[in-house]
Length: 100
Image (cartoon, rainbow, N blue to C red; front, side, top):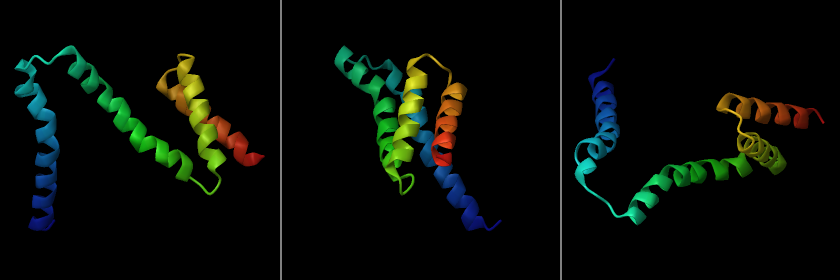
């Protein structure tokens, strides 16, 4: 492996590690107001939604493919299924949809 590739990988690892390490070591002593704690608790869900929602409509030429997969997964998750079952239901629904 070339040394420049090694240093690129090392740099990416450090840059990825720092934002995860800082909250655990430095910011855990800071007492935030309840409003900001609530906002920070919802950041992962908002980020996940921002990453997933555009992909639902752009997954194929047929937008119904993503919409059906999304709603079948949401329905299975709202019924209390675990992640593996949610994925299986979405794949099953999309498999049936593509055969029609």
